[in-house]
Length: 307
Image 1 (cartoon, rainbow, N blue to C red):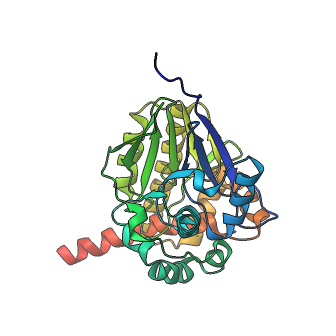
Image 2 (image 1 turned 90 degrees about the horizontal axis):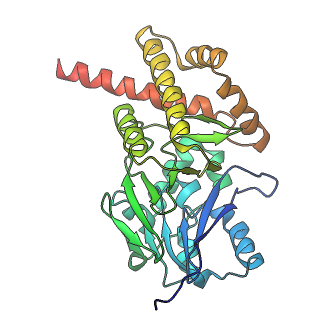
Image 3 (image 1 turned 90 degrees about the vertical axis):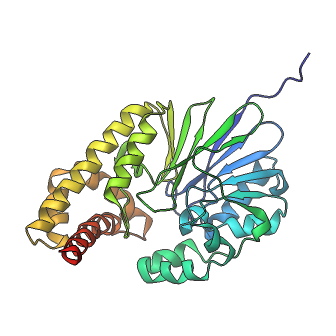
């Protein structure tokens, strides 16, 4: 007779970086009864919140065996170095393009300060991860956790080094930023510069083909009716791209495009109420729109260089 295992438990842990903010950033803890696997590490300034959660639930940092990062942006991978500091045996999975920036996060930190300014300070500065704690998986690589297994999916677009994580038996897709921001039952893109429109659409198609049951958003929480939510996101994303592309071709600036899209897209208004409430990153939508706008600037430049 085989050894029976406890059923897998999945926890959503709020690791928002300010004590008075809830529902901004989460990581997921998958407990297979023997050890913990984290999807995301969260921001550096959310790490103490995570440690408190571990203690309150009877876990220790030594219980963590794997950390699966969707990408290395400060709100997703920032606390990786702290986890490795407190658990020298942890294995952290990161896209090959993100690998050098975890070993030496100084360039990532400077770039974050330059692009998102105060928000980077809210997230906190990362510390290095020893290279012996890092693994760079291939696309479609499988990570066995006993009663279930994770599948790594390369899903570029939001970032060239973005991965989404699929828990196969549970049919839960952890999306990182590949399917945008989820607040108030709505989804909108998060598409900072540099952003790639065709790769984002390819990634959406790739994720939809899995026919997941649930989506686990890093921003923020679990959503049922996963396929319908992916389809909803695709409609919103394509709409944003269409409005930005048409505006760019007409010579409109990004603030004018923003006003036009906001006037017809209620999802923006719903999500912006949350952005204003947290006291940082209030210009999230404008920032994302500029990422899409910059894609068309880049394509225009390439076209002129080729002519």
